[in-house]
Image (cartoon, rainbow, N blue to C red; front, side, top):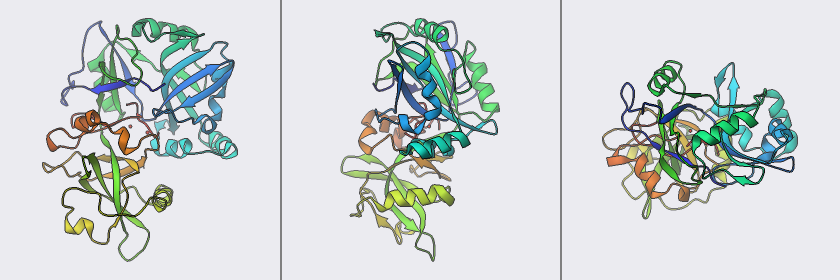
Length: 349
């Protein structure tokens, strides 16, 4: 099952257009990876937004299988470092395929599963029920433990928006209390209001560091008919383990002709190696210029849960309205220029 996705909410200032009143509930937007947790006969299966099985990567969540029910949960895996969410630490986890290494990483940096929806219970399909009924059942079934908990919900959306901004959190998600669960659909019954601008972009080439052969920067863009439209060069965030891991991934991507359909400026294309447009990465920025170029972009992680084909025309449109680069998110997908920054490696949507 693919998770239900949120639509970017209107506005960016002050309350950002967050809906008010008893018809809406509001949750924190976590900086993690969206996971569907399925429990059947005591066995847990964890899948990403694109239905990739990553159960082996999170052994600390196996206890979800001991709750005495068959369940289908929607939630976000989040890694906390000194009380703050760390998306970069989580990226390493979701790419782990070795059980032994996963256990070692879980001991060092355990993940918490923050559940926000119950969409199946003991063989019953709960997706046709309103959010309020599913939420009530979730709170009855899932008792908070050290490695999982029910993500809190709030009545005051504008207040939560301001509080999460002050605390440097990702943002909020507002949900209509009567909304049914629509697997794989992006619905206006769920609205996301991120604080930080991030985007899911496709790597079309790379450049080495000046005077060296190692990875120095990425050339990234958005899918359009015939290739990619250029959105800029990303050099920040590529030092250390993150850059080394990305360089390994790039080495397996076929080299080819320039995939960008528009002109790449000479200073950006100098010394570039062009790649087949296969890798999707998460990039944070300060938005975009009027020409659609990223402002002060920084690499955040490889989106192993996404392919260029997963960036649907609807998502690309919300991410690039009128030529301005939009924001994406945990684990999720592109957003509008008024929207935010999250992972497989998702952000919430």
